[in-house]
Each structure stands twice: as C-alpha cells, then as structure tokens.
Length: 508
Ligand SMILES: [Zn+2]
Image 1 (cartoon, rainbow, N blue to C red):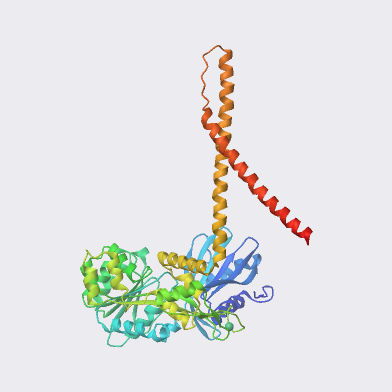
Image 2: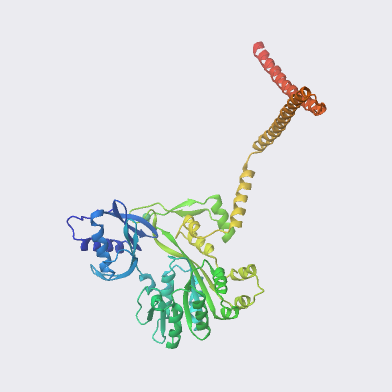
C-alpha cells in the first residue's frame, strides 16, 4: 500500500501520481471504491486486483470530483452512472483511458480502464500464436472477402488481436471502416465510427451506411444480435473482408451461435474464413521459475491430450522482478481455418454436432487445451493457470481419475488386499447378526403386544384371537442361540490358546 500525503499535497498531483503509477506498472484498471469508513484504491495487474492506497473519507469527494473532471463527466451529477474518457499527457507519457462512475450506497465508485494497445501496434507475431496458427491467420487475411471472427470472454484480449489484424491490413490501397462500441484505439488511416444507441446509431444501422462508403475491410466491434450477424454475413459475401468478435468459447460453439442467430447455413458456409478463439493466462517470470516433477494427474492429461510423456513442468516461485512468480499475460489460442470440406459440412443440415466436431478438430486444429498445454511444456505458463481458464472435458476427467485409482490399487501389496477381504467377511457377518437381532426384538415386542391385547379382550368377555406365530419366533431365537454359542466357542478357543502360551511361558 502506498501512503499519499492528502494533507499537504494538492489533489491534482495525487490523482496524477495514482494514474502514473498504474501506467508504469502496466495496470489495466484503477478502482476507486467507496467504503463506509474510507475509500480504497485498488489496481488490477495481470488480471488480479490488489489494494493500492487508502483515502480518508474527508478527501473522497475531492478525489472523485477531480477524476470526473479530467474524464469530462458532469461533476454535479452523482446519482446516475456516467461514462467518460481521459486522453492526454501526464509527465510526458501519452495516456488513453475510459472512465465510468457508478453510484453505490457508500458513494460514487469510479473505475478507470487504461487502454494499452502498444502490443497491437507491434503486429501479430508478438501475440503468442504458435507458428502453425500464425500461418493460418495470415492465410485468412490474404483472402479479400469473408468473415474472420475472434472469440472469447470479456478481457480475453480479443481487441488486441483484432486491432493487430487490422494493423496488418492497414495499407493505403484499402478503405477500412470500423464500427465500435466504444472506439478503443485510434488508428491512423482508418475511419472509425462510435456506436450511439441513444440516437439510434446501432451496429446494424451504422453498418448499412458503411456499406455505401465503398469499404474493403470492415471491423464490427462485436456481433451481439442476429441483425448485426446477418448484415455482417451479407457484407462478407458481397466482396468485403469483415473482422469481428463474438462472445463464445471455441470454434465449434461459434458456428452454432451464428446458426442460432438465424444466419442461414449456405450464407455462413460461404462467408466464414476463420475463427480465432482465445483466453489469457499469466506468464511465468523467467527469472525465478523452477522445474518440478509432474503429478500423476498432470502426466495423464499430457498423455491423453498431447500423446506426450511429460515428467517435469515449471512452477512459479516469486522474486523482486515479478508478482508472485508471474509477469504479464499471454494468449492461448485455437485457430480454425475454414476449408472447403468444412464449408460443405456447415451447409449440410443433416450433419450432427458430433460429426461437425470431428471435422473441426482434425489434425490441423489444435484445441485451446492443446495449445495451452504446449505452452506449459515450453515453460511459458503453468498447468494451474491453464486449468483455471480451460474446461477439461468432463468424461475425460472422469476417465483419468478412474485410471489413477486403478493404478494406485495395483500398487497395493497383496497382504493389504487379504486384510480387506477378511475385514469384508467379518463385516457382512456382523451385519447379518444385527439384522437378526432386530428381527427377534421386533417379534418379541409384537408377542408382548398380542399377549396384552389377549388379556384385555378377555376381560371384556370377547372371543380370544391367538395372533402369535410361535414357530417363527422360536426359530429365530434358536438361530440367535447359535450365534451366541459360536461366539462362546471363539472365546473358548482364544482362552485355550491363552492358557497354552501361559503354560509354555511357565515351562520356560
Ligand atoms: Zn520472478
């Protein structure tokens, strides 16, 4: 935690310092959280939030007002959420930030998102694509028309990948237009349109106008509804290259999602060029990472998913150069290039999900999990990081757990198994005895009850009914006697043995 001198330092300087600190440490967000007794400033670095500073309640209002002022928000309005932006130079550093405010019961909460697309400007090669995946992306970009989709959850680095692709396409012979909500990074030479649904400028309506502007390449910030999906597909089959993002998990679910959005099969199969699915994992600090032996479970996963025998992987340690053994993040990817064969299958409605899945994940397409595990073997990230973001198929997980159990059982010594057998025998005898005793008790109770009933009825001069099944209960009691007799036998035997040993000892 950092201590700011709220008493002596002007609030303008404190806000500048906070922002500069975030920027220097590559934080992605700054949170100003009002609490009951103070305000907590938190920063998100490599995807994790941690406390940065504490602001006494009396300075909270000044601080939020200053942040809202430089974000060009209405500082007199505190009851409704607002959006703003900070663009400018602080201490010689050029900064681009999106700011949002939210009224809460403890006061106004403000979040500042620092947009850092410096990696987008360095091109596709720095985004962590495997060489095979990078080749596939280049091939997609070489096709002058069609759709390329980038998929993943919020905060999976979709924008960085999309901007990097746009940057590759940004040559003077192309007319590139984007429609975004919001425009996340200004790119020289590109026409960017900011969606504003309040005045009716939606993705769909903006797209219709854009198509009349003779574009070569169109970037649609996100496909959220079927209208946008349909316009995007139509634009793609009429000679435009369309880049967009969609909120799905992998290639297969993206195809299904678009079909659910009422995009017609024949149009989709013609328009789609490729799908890039991605997630972010933290990268190991190269300065302190250490090798450790793989666990039984990890071994099985590597063997089942990659067909490789892996005995050692890296684990995080932590040093002054990193954050608990991690430094920065990288993307894990699944890149699907749509082949003619896949086009046929997508177009064919008789093809079921399983067949489509098999065709999508042939030898050419590495799944997110495969790509991630390769990055674990190469020492970029850890098994745990991957496990956190990628779902391991439930059936596979069950299969692996079972085979580990079997293996452990095989390792048990034969004597252990004998003991278990003997124990099982004793247990089943005991169970039988208990159920017999219960039965006898019940019968005896019934017997007592019927005797009582008999007596009562007798007094009233009514005919006697003998409900007692004497024979059955006698049988049970005899059986119980046998059990007790056996037990006595066991006692006798052990007593005899005891006597023998005592005798021997005495003889000695
Ligand atoms: Zn380190």
